[in-house]
Image (spheres, rainbow, N blue to C red):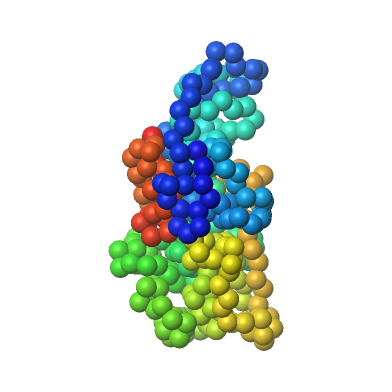
Length: 333
């Protein structure tokens, strides 16, 4: 249960383990009981913990932490779903939940393992897919830079961009992640942001990796990286703001002030657009249709960082901000 609003990095101190008995004997028509197998942890959860409104009011204290979950139906009073079906739903950090059959997504286990419904075939993939294709208006031959490129969203974006015939540069924070991007995902070049901590250093690295400039920047991180990218984008560039993870721990309520760059937006006629996964909630089948085929055929690869144990959920969430994940961070319960 989410019990204390963090002032810096979220930790176990912000949660309380709550145990109660779930009565499943009198399910209403259309209700099912789902037993969680995999529970999601995502950077957006830290945004919800801000004291200020974001895309919604702050996550209330004293209730279950909201999140996605993949689990098995163990009881059903539904005409469409049966015991043994695997589903994805937004029931939060709890091991069992009673939900309506209209509030879950039935999973096709023939395409991929059920855990992928939280990552490569779930919310992160949805914002990656529609973000780069629809909002980004990606074109063959363009140069695409992705920050947080080894994460759940970023690793999906770089692969879609490669499939669309683009030159792709991934920004990550370790040699291991850079090797993953180059050797497994065929990214054209990588930049280690921990070795380029100043705007000047990052600009230099970007100019080396992107000699013809940047057409699309898919931003998951913000901060100095974004300040630097602004300096090297081409005329008509598109900047897609999906996340600002560098700001979440200490700058949500009092944002850091970076260089004033609106004059650069003017000179280069840059389009900057914020994108949220929820913008495309009702288009999940459209995304699954293409992404599911890519995953099944091996055209899209994925990694999952799976931590064992329900009690490890707060630690896993905190780990996102220390770069402890490659691909999707998931807790198995």
